[in-house]
Image (cartoon, rainbow, N blue to C red; front, top):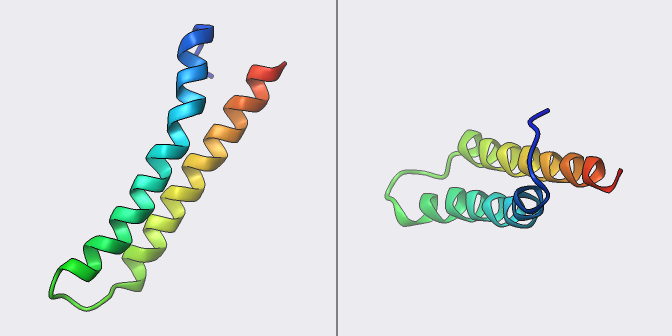
Length: 66
């Protein structure tokens, strides 16, 4: 795992969920703003990235508490 200072780790733990939510919202909203049909594959990819970022945040927070 990457070694981070305390302040950088706190910032990463705080901001990664915001980034995950931005990915999920942009994935869904962008599909409604275009004229292409709704893509289940793109929606599932957005959910997968959202989930991966949240899991990364939880793992980082767990390690931080030790």
